[in-house]
Image (cartoon, rainbow, N blue to C red; front, top):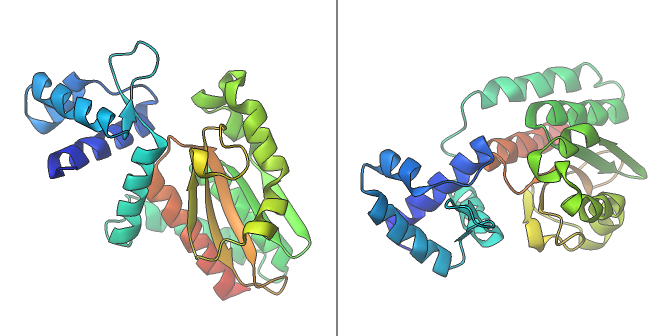
Length: 236
């Protein structure tokens, strides 16, 4: 993939996250200051490589799971050097909520989940020892992807099995991202899991994370989940 193709892929992913509609060549041409024909040519190459696709008969394109994976790997490689706007303020809000319950560890973790739900619009969960806490079903199913029933059963299966899957898979990185078909359960759910592992008094393998559509602001959500896991480990 050339540098320009990579930049176009990033633009498609970030525009699609914002507008929840396929991104067309006219929009991208204005962004890059080139002709629509040039953009269409580059988009055709990205489609051939499997990074974007055309949904139904739309003239625009949306990212594939493969495209998202390239994008997320780029964020990980950059180690979040370019932090999203407002991330520090959001992280401080989570910290304030967690601090208010620091004398009761399970309440602190639940508060952290609730804060992630509020700030990301995703479904949030935490698994710690024998405890499983979940919140945000309304937010999750308010996303455009899940309003109609196509993905609902698959994502419900993913949520129902999350604790068993975490026990079996034991994701061992401070931040783990499973995109769409990478999910071992609910491969067709069109959902992404972003999970942080942390040590707590309940278990060395405690987890906090979110489940949302593959279309989302990865840079912001990944950083919030990573910081929340690190914060819980430090405070608890």
